[in-house]
Amino acid sequence: MPIQDKLPKSRITLVYRTKINGQPEDVKLPFRVVVLGDFSQGSSKDRQLDLDERAMRSVTGSNINELMKDMGMSVSFEVDDKVSADGEGKMQVELPIDRMKSFHPDEIVHHVPKLKALMLLRKLLMEMQSDIDNRKELRRTLYELFSNKEQLQKLLESDALKSYESMRLPTPAKAKSDQPALAAGTSAAKA
Image 1 (cartoon, rainbow, N blue to C red):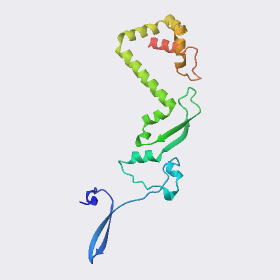
Image 2 (image 1 turned 90 degrees about the horizontal axis):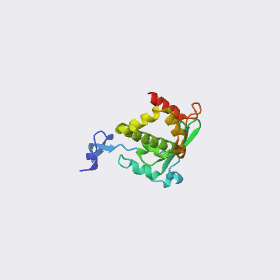
Image 3 (image 1 turned 180 degrees about the vertical axis):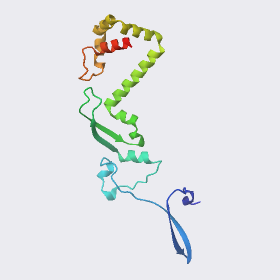
Image 4 (image 1 turned 90 degrees about the vertical axis):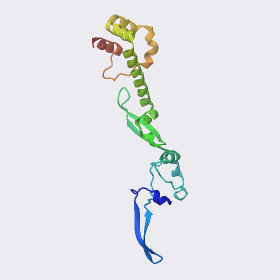
């Protein structure tokens, strides 16, 4: 059975009438298109070759990831930096495009260090929330700590927290206070 008989009916075909050996006959040709373009915006390694030396590529659903990886594409752009504490400035982003999943948000996060740090922080906070929800004793201890202002102040001033200073979350310039953890602790105790 020829491959043309196995093709789905939804595929576009051209039919023309001709005479073969004096008999009129319908001949079907599959519709094929050659597309020429620079879809990598100049970042493909093929761009360095002359046009007549470049390989023709057949794009199918099953080989698209291989083609993208082989072309060695990447995109570089600048976006507003909304992650930093001040929320101003620009952030340079360089994304390699080596498969269709390269456009997925989770994949983009892995290539932007600031976003990757935020995702790690989110994961740690989710684990902390789970710990608080599942451990009654920890919940009770935290409640006691945040409800006693003197004890909280003593903890904040102790040398035990000095080594964790580098892990403090940045605060916006507008809402800076001398003791943001104390303010958060008193609001949590009231709630």
